[in-house]
Length: 246
Ligand code: 13P
Image (cartoon, rainbow, N blue to C red; front, side, top):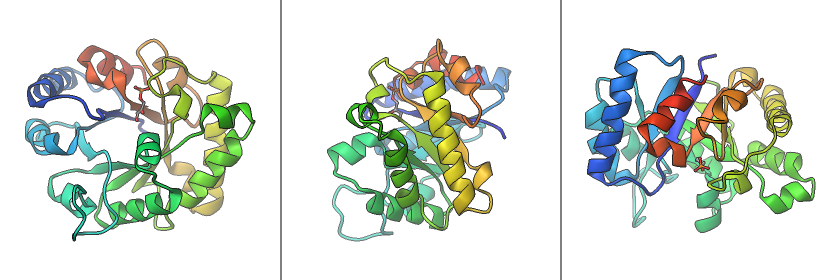
């Protein structure tokens, strides 16, 4: 399975910064196939400018969230239909920052994922435990609950990617041990295999403080099929180094 390395830019990069970043990535990608699929997810306002820049490159474009409905009175929201219309192939849903800051629950996330899939997008569904939950040894049950409830029934290995992002590892410089990552990824793979005919083929990404120093070891773990990268996706050298670590 070809790994996917996705850059979640979050609320970063003005247009000029975004242009410099993608120009650098495209230059590297033109010289070498890193052996993985590459995805960048800019903030909504930068989707079209970035899309124009990467139009004829193998780098894919994604959104960071979408609404579950196609259109309507939802001030400030963007639909999956609009993302597809703007040239996106992917959309992230259920990121822990949206779960925490926008009170999103698994039911809502599943409806967003469903809308994304219906619009021909590949959805990246994020799951992961808090530190408190890990310390209480609830990691596997929390992740199991999230996967069971947030991955919609129309998911297939082609239209859905699951990203395991321990909340306490995001932006902190902390990462789980290799054994902990393997344990959760094996568990997710087992759950998907039990629920979907092609469950074994879903790409499972790890996210949370992935950087050029730890990417190789994490990406070598069985059932880790790529990464969802935040901070390190904002620098050409770092993101490219992670891509070439697969
Ligand atoms: P960091 O790589 O900055 O820890 O962020 C991970 C993340 O949240 C990607 O979605």
